[in-house]
Image 1 (cartoon, one colour):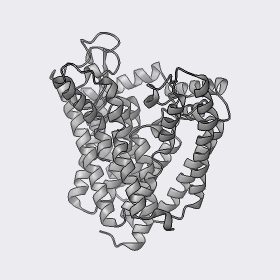
Image 2: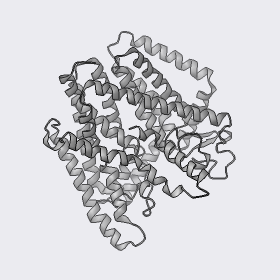
Image 3: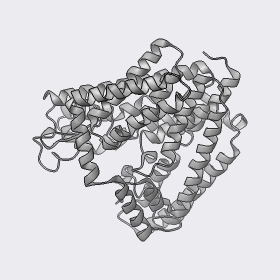
Image 4: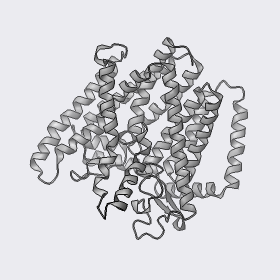
Length: 443
């Protein structure tokens, strides 16, 4: 969980050291090893948790319907692997399609066990409290580093993208890397900015900010300490500022809406809600009229939306997949995974339903839809069973994240970092909250 938001920074930081002291050794080809480094932490820890808690002997996680649908999803993925990937590998000498299939299995199935990790590691309310604070600090640190990155670019400490040749001066590139993270675009002359924060790519940073909005608000709402509650509000402001300066259209649209929706659904019985909304509205007006950056970002957002409306893009991708690639078992696991591009040719599919249909077919998509629907219903029941106001507020915010990601039609956050990790771990947290409430007194 520590390495996840800092992985891009560590990857290219180590690469920079090798390039500086390695006498010209090319390091680019080994980036993928560092992108997979989190699994070197995750897999041994997962095995250790399963053995230590003897999960196979315990009946405390009674989710029979979820286990059945997970087993069905595993079965459909294996059908695609054995009946699509392996036969295709026998007839294609150029691509390593079997290895691509293994990458695909890791993408779709690899992090589902995080449900068990969260459920068994958060074994009392003290551990839950410490873990929530730990997440809060990680978010605050990552957003602070992004702000420093932005200031370095604005003040010319980092050169940015302006003087780079095309297409590096109009798209995110490692050649413009600055301070932390990976591929970056900063060309103020053309009103182009895409910051990666501490991540490998700008779009990963955008989804980190979106996930962080749910987490930071939920943790702040449930925090019993005034000091940490205040730090939670600082973190919320940091997420909003990072969203504003990063130039990410998706985050700029969703993060403020998420915070507003969470405020409304968690404070619906608060007598001061109207006052809070009025203050929020006045502050927003002051910021938008006094800070030119806000006007610039909003104008850029509207311009990009008009040039390429997301809803049209989603419809176009759905039509493309239904017209050309609707099959029962799909075209092969890993065939759209960027992690598999060195093993063979991949197809760029940028909306989630189209991506999963392309890889594992209509059967796999229907089973996957059943999986996330079952997970959404069960986590909702877990949240609704909570009676303690603090835990109930936290549960509602976390469940809203599960609901949003489960049916998100745009891009593919559930197949890549960081959402692929947070989604399953937060599901495990939600399943454990009712148990903690029954067994432990509030901290």
